[in-house]
Length: 182
Image 1 (cartoon, rainbow, N blue to C red):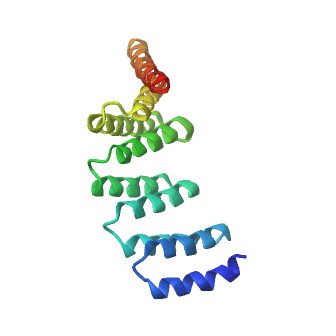
Image 2: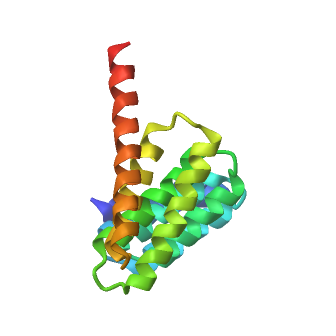
């Protein structure tokens, strides 16, 4: 029962005000109860309790993802990247959210989609520069390239994007199979 858990978690926050996990537990209680304004405020308090901890930004980003707030989601993912610039997973994460937004949000103009796709491709490239055998980043690079083909007008360029995207997908699949065979 969330109403019984709330005072306990409030007390835990009082005892350890610099521990983000307690704020995040309370925020989740609010979120699950439909108290989204309180949930957001509490998630942000948790993030602010340890602003130099890259993982707090992922927790807040996940909240914004559940709420469908892409701009705040990306803001927090970018802060995570800023704190962990050499973590390929941080860059990969941005590529995945970029592909998801560009491929599923039909309210976006082609120009908006293209910018999101280009940001995602830059993130996938950064992840691959940090870890060249990052299969998941290869997969998303392929997906982003093929998604870019959908917004481009030049048929020849579209075909080039599809070909390159397919090559990245094939490379990722070959690496997966090779790893599974070992």
